Length: 252
Image (cartoon, rainbow, N blue to C red):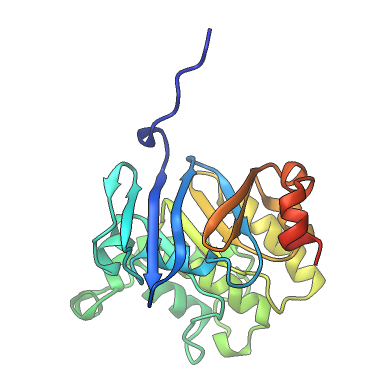
């Protein structure tokens, strides 16, 4: 018996026929991408392949010229960034964006959903619920013993983990990370791999990365992009053996 074909309703994220052009240049060209619940997807490819632009489109930072983006079967393509965040999509950029003069606790606290925005900040109270959430997230990202530490004093890797924790405070159902291990030590990379595998339970995750050893450790599925399109997709073993991928990316 032939299994029925999957539809966009079966995926947490469906990107269909997505295109964006900048002055006639197609940075993303008729791209289709589907991400399952609880899946850790890694996107690889040469510089200029369109990887970061794809995340910009999903989170609403850049507007598509054509195509559609659906999250939990709801149309996201034309929504403003704040509505996309509220729908359950969290995005981490390459450079850590934390409040360096605040403590780890305070960084996590201000990321609690009710604490965001002008009115949220005015009426926000440090309840037992907030404290419990901060402590749970801090333990999850390996900073449970650093709650009183000023964020600016953390190591580079710890700052990256703190920003991931700030996203986790909002309990996103899709987490997108752009080169999360850039600049990390070998040990920090190992701990980050363990962290990502741990926090992927109960949510989907998209990670852009160049470190192939790291990709092998974390990826459920790998997507290879080239010139705004998907060149190959599948397990790490499958894409590593693909002659096209070797030619345009891995061979260099």
